[in-house]
Length: 272
Image (cartoon, rainbow, N blue to C red; front, side, top):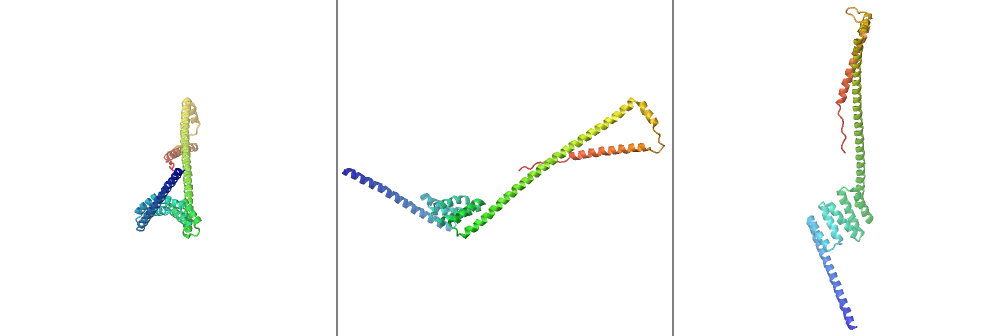
């Protein structure tokens, strides 16, 4: 029994020693983390933000849950305009901080970093979280109003841009339809003109054919017509001449219209 008692005592002493040593190591790391934090603060106050961020990162290496080090590291990133890198540090502070005022400051700075990146919706959300932890912060309330206004403007601009895009697309479709219609009308006019010319040639050929087939009939017909006096045209000849001139003018006008339509450019659709 005595041996068992001595073994238990030795075991307790060894376990206690390990626990004491672990606590001592933890305290040593915390002291080292605080020392590195102070070094980082000195560099930060000298506007040496890059060197300060290195010191803060070393401090977090010794104590990962050191919210002051993460918050200050976020500030160093922010001052160097590394807004994207600053946000996770502020988020870590907001998560690990025990008091509401520290949380509110972290969320406030998240909002500022998001505003710098023109990410207005996340900025609005961050400022709202800051006010939930500190409702009396007028600076956060002002920033929230600005972010909401910019967010509303962004949404309206996107809406207007979308509407303009749809209008341009509809206009292009209408222009394309109009061009297709013009081409169809052009082809129709050309076809009608060709058919009329063909018909006129056919009528002319039929007349010549009739004339060849029955020359005596034409001769008899000519004999029956009253002969015009010298230097004077009959009313029938005048009418025929006018009709001939009128037909020639119509054919010429149709050919000119067909050529004009053929030279029209086809608009291409805009590539959106």
